[in-house]
Amino acid sequence: MASGSDPPEPARLQQAPAAPLPAQLIQRYLRLFAFYDRDGDGRHTLSGDFEPVAARIDARWQGRSTPFPNLLQLLRDTYQHENERRDRDHDGQVDREEFVVSHTRVFAAFRADPNGARRFIARSAGGFFDVLDLDGDGVLDLDDLAAFAAAYGHPTGGIAANLDRMLTVLGLPPGLLPRDAFLTLVEQYWFDPSQEAPGRHLFDGVSLAEGCLQRSAVE
Image (cartoon, rainbow, N blue to C red):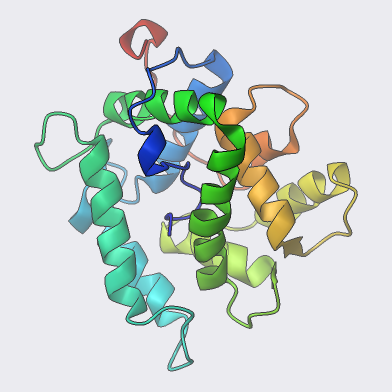
């Protein structure tokens, strides 16, 4: 299960040669870094950023039967794994450069085997979809999406308009995000650098303070 909309990392593709990242994708990764930086200190840590998020997401279920056994531990383990694989100098934290650089091989893996990567997206991002889909009806509503943003401490007032903008391009009615559409937007956000892909707006519904990273530092 991926934490939100993280990219696929099929085991047999992890050794794919690194590929240069398009500038458009670098900017999206930096925006996502800022989204994940819950405490705003310019780095990702388990205690400062991800453990509080795991607790808030788990608390939403309020005694309901969760889609996974021991959901809180699963979320903690997932966040720990993802942060550790990005932590190049093993200092227990991930900065903006490490976050971007960690996706060069992921981008190469997608280009090497798009269908295999899509199957992985369906399992991993699809699993996180189930965690957010509190009523289990196969669609995320505004409450589900707002709860995810709020877990990271972000305002949620712009989420509805941003969601409807993406749904309109996909030819879907407003207000509800089906699983297949969610997976499409996740794939586009991570791997489609075009300015026509609605998925490029996936995290545009909240105001973020984005950091800067020179392109030469991540190629």
